[in-house]
Amino acid sequence: MHSQFKKYFPYISPFDPCPPIRVKLYNTPPQLYMNFQPPGLPQFSPYEALRKGTLWPALYGPYESKVEEGSPWI
Image (cartoon, rainbow, N blue to C red; front, side):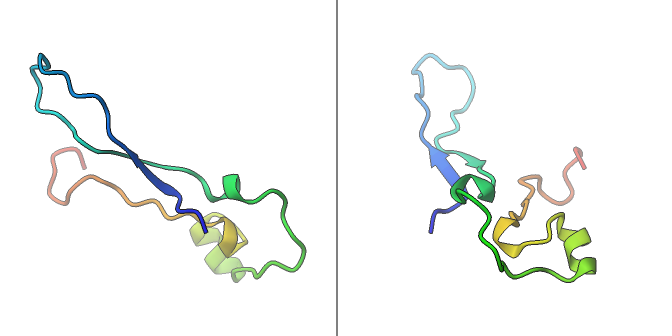
């Protein structure tokens, strides 16, 4: 099974005035790893599907915010 969370290591210039970000993370949607939707997939209940944004658990990709609690950006 593929993970929907990926990481890469960007080039860090010795002349960059900002502190470097050594590892960058990004999220890929789960439907990229499914060629077609097979029949008979399990389904969420209607209420749960509305909360999660999809009817099928195989296509659900949680979003985890990288913003910390108490940050002025919230």
